[in-house]
Length: 473
Image (tube, rainbow, N blue to C red; front, top):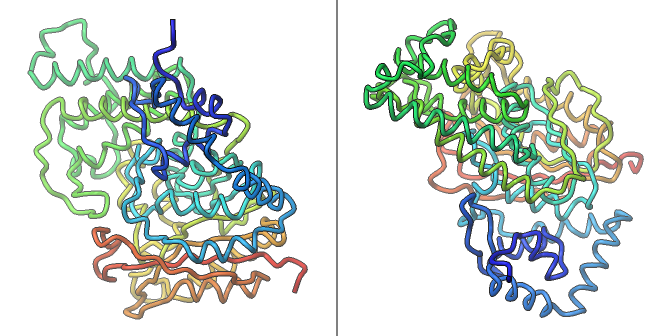
């Protein structure tokens, strides 16, 4: 009996191409997207698989030779500088791009860069098997793309929540871990339905979520309704009770993803209170949906990423200059000074997850609260310049000579004056032996929110491409 559907791996094998090539064709619209199965995985019909095979065979031998030639030059390092002019000609706005595929959308994280940016830079400025570093990894966007492209990844961040999210987004979960998570999603879904209908007391065999330990951090009652506190406490207890570590971490990220939604905090970008009229059982229902969605996306990620490529997510303060070993490429979006305060807007998430939010608050780079502070304790342009000086002294040692460091950064307003962060960054980088190869301007979508309304709408940002000259100078 003929097989009904085929996976991405199987169709790539049939076509004689790498899976990443097939995925790129799909993203570029060169072949149509297939249907999806009940787990939301791509499921090619026989006709769709045959169409891919025909498309692959239609690629000319000359094109294949050009690709092989470029890949061979990557190995020697000769083509990287040739790649920079190509990068300068691209449209970096990515207006209609899908930015939420795979695990990229499992958790809210303001001001992250879209995956198409690191994906493009990694493809042009590194080779398969290289190690790519993001020293401000945030929610792990670069690490996900590096693994998808057959590179090893290192993500560094002082924010413990960032590190947890990044670990989950880049973890290849097993089917047994997924089954445990889906079982929990079903259990919490049932609880949500019973609670919303007011039927829970009629079921004496149901676990009592009021027995879960309630948090005691300052202000919990100000930011959450009583019934929301009880439901979140029970969800946290169930997440912690999962038997497999990867499952526990994923479940906690799913819980974290809904905390602001069920709280009285206005949004991820506004730290003001408002009543959201969250009903009994809503927290259970939201968590169940988030857990189901996160598990499905994690499974799809696991199917697309080859186990040969590994990732390290390191919780550390970059200003302490940790020794992470040599890397082949740096791709990152550092904090814009005076733009955002992650310690504030993620405060309740971090406290619910027993993270040391006060300690992170002290060391957060670029925090709006640090730059808006009046008096001698307030941060200035010189504060950021000094931090960049420390960072580039460290990067000059970690990044291999003649390899590239790419920074996506926009302007700031500090003490009422506009600061061109790209120019500041370039000036400091040159001091430490880096050479500027490109400074590409890209427009941000008009619907993007300002980080901090007082500094105005950020309309564009720069992709700064530097090369570690090493011993050349």
